[in-house]
Image 1 (cartoon, rainbow, N blue to C red):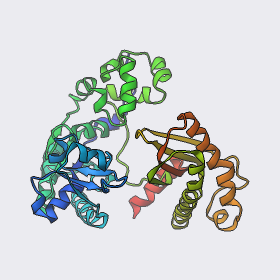
Image 2 (cartoon, helix red, strand yellow):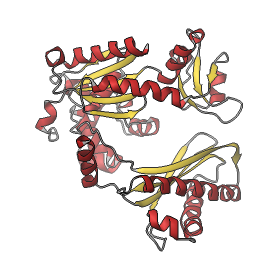
Image 3 (cartoon, one colour):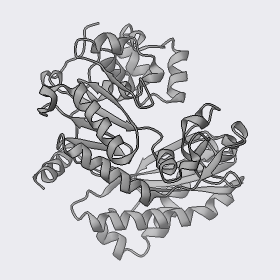
Image 4 (tube, rainbow, N blue to C red):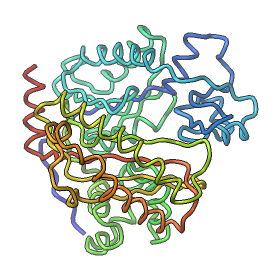
Length: 388
């Protein structure tokens, strides 16, 4: 099978992916040196339904991971120290780190507070060596904040992100353009961003363990078995990723979710919570539309549930059962909108998904809206941000 099309411009890119090491926990250790050398996790209390944001490497030795329930983490590591998140403090450090990035390039794509892509193709530091630039960025972050970061250097975003995880913590790994194809082909699918545990198990059941296995399958077969993920993995198997570093990323969804102290065991208990979720989701949507006057209106609604076994499921649909389009004006001037949304859309969607999960008790409910962000809108916003 021949390689998919490679955008020639992407061959010339020099991309760095910077990922802070256990960022939240590292900040807490920096502020409280007595925590160093101890197993630390940032997240909710283990006495309730808390979930971990992150854990330091001492905790990870015991199998503690981010997104794990705090109660389960405590069972794995009985001496684990729990710290409640301090988002304002983490943002202070994130802004400082972002300022350091800006000394090397204007093409910065933040993925979260603790990681970002940098396009340093046109950076003249170190005679244009992206590896030496990445090392200087790491050194500067440590010198000015006391925090360590890992970095991956590659000709595209996919390989740079994989590379940043290669020598964690405080690591630096480079995939050169002539190494890209062989490096990608031999990757375990578990190392590929976007392939979670459920998808990985599905791939293994299909006999797919590495990206090389993906190459050996016809594209039609991949599309049937894996949907749109199939062609995406095929491109990645050749080390190809044509996506540019994007400095302007408009929100594509607005949502809210709630984890409950006691599992919701019947649908009537779920129905009781739906109005509160709907009210919060609509309020967030209204604030967003008011703040972003040129923001597209939502065109889909989605729900999320998490069962008592921690299995997550989502379901989405088009807002075709409402008599009005959701926008800032209708949210203000349509009295029956809230009731219609609950009765005609949200409740039936939850009932359908609840039944599909064999009416398993639920620990989390979520509700949100997909915004109709077109490619042209994103490009327009990107241009405006660059001008600013």
